[in-house]
Length: 226
Image (tube, rainbow, N blue to C red; front, side, top):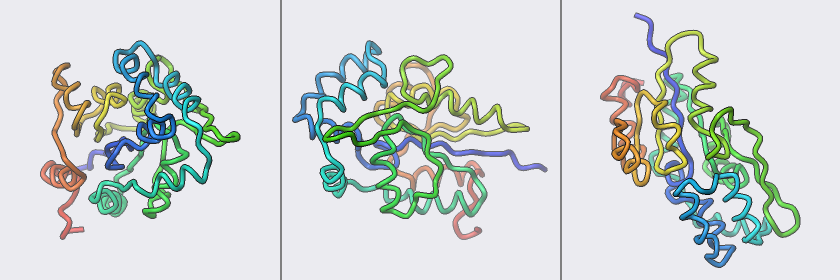
């Protein structure tokens, strides 16, 4: 029997990273002023592109400041082993984020995971501020910087046969991806969103939980059978 092609898409902030790096970054360097923007974003009155640009303009930060700030952030303890199991078992693994490559790349390099494909928005330093670009085009979504749902659909369209999509996320920026997933892992705001919209999901605390469930579903072989 031909094995069903499977790809895994994972959010970064609050999912792979244990805390939301982008939110805390702009909150810290703005002296907390960026928190006033969140209600409009959560209510859909402000897009991710708008809030990211406005947050960056409120938060002066140099590259040295950023590197010092990132020292306090870690990844989910189960993620490096999960990524290695995906590689060993030929499961494509993508990081999809509505944050910034500026800090994601640094953290991935620290944990020797810089080889993983990353789809996100682009941040760069211009003087003492972070400037933001949006290299990924959304065909329909007006809410997201880089719409994870559209990225998943684009991936499916490139495949020659049936494809099973696993998605792992934690926040409202993952809402567009939720209905596109065949196997959905959710926590925090994303889990509440799924319950409100009758989207089936599996709750998880960390990537150890994700790996165990994927073993039970036959997506991952058991660790001692690799």
